[in-house]
Image (cartoon, rainbow, N blue to C red; front, side):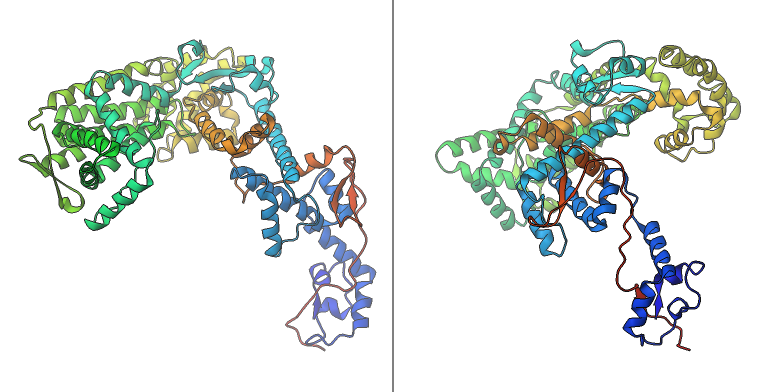
Length: 612
């Protein structure tokens, strides 16, 4: 048997004690010997040294609470804050907080005796959100440059996170909006995801039939989404003919291209099952029968089926582009390059003919003499009407219009200064060193002149000289993505690249997309439901801030929020004990003396050494 405290610190422990050396066989020590050792001065010093090294690194009021009431109380409060964070992150009702606490206690988690109701949950969430505002404020104040989005462009919203007009004027390098002309200015950039949608809508208007086509697709989704009975019948037919179960979700008025592609692909996949069910319903009478006949009349036309497969091929290309434009790590330098790649794919489809598309070529191979083979392994047959529609010219014209309208929408990003940021994409640099030496010099000079109001005099004069050093440094890192390379550079901040990294910082700061704002709107719609009609504005703001936090439950650290909670109390916080034996901690920031109470017996473990 050995004392783990004394064994860990042999220079402090009593070298003559058998418990320090590891003796006693299989634990044949008398209780009096163990008690005497636990009260010895050298053992107490070893124990205090061990506890001081392994005590959590608390600060402020939380440290005082830890020293006054013990670490167990801090863990209890931390568990309550973590549970509150989970409630807010999942968008649950505050009333679920008490049930979650009861569940954890049933599983053996000690949560104490207080602060386990919905009001305490609201208070904890408010302190977590306050701490998030504090963190955002500090990040914005220490950021070298700022780029504002749709919501943050409002002065009142900016001031809530501690950014004054002076800071905004001195650091603002760009604003990103969703496309309204009244919001555009000298430093404004259209949201690239919205711009892509608007460009496609402009091209759709050039083909009158596409409006009717879109209405038919939405009609099918609405027909099944709002009727559980029709969905059950559709599932039954799928099982009878051994096809995949068809499920049609709700279609909103405005959707991203990625969602539109998924809806078209779903209709193509379940086309045969849908036709069979509509034919079955159409045999009856009533309103449903009339609606099914109207949908069936359009769905079985050769023109609709051809447009369906053609539009899947087109939206497949645009879907990937739209998803790239909605990523948070999108650089302003990536926009034009990804747009050119999508334009090349659409132009290739135009030049080679729609028959070269994956889905349209599949239709051509499965269609013969007015009979369309579809479903699993082309096992189902559907006779199409209005045969002989020649749509190749319409498809070719539409592809050209899509490329043209999208290019027009992105005209501002294809011109200086934003197009000049492409020179920072080191994966596109010339391989020859002689060409690399002069590559991008003019673009860097233009960028320096354009953003000179936001740069210091040293940065303005030093960017050209350090541009060559940056190219030589990154020339060997072509296999790494620009996001990773420049993130590492900004963290290292080498002395010979400080001025050119100012332009890199601007490139990373400029936000070309407002998709994060759209996700915030979606979060707000999920939080502010009809069942929470009395929710206060401050509560909604707190929940949305927590919802947008990058931390999840496993990475969330509640210490700073607990400090805010302790300091915000008008009197003392009752953090431990029952109602008849309440312990309190004040909100004073100074720390109390460390406790000197020791356990009655030392911490013991079996030793491999034999007794003397």
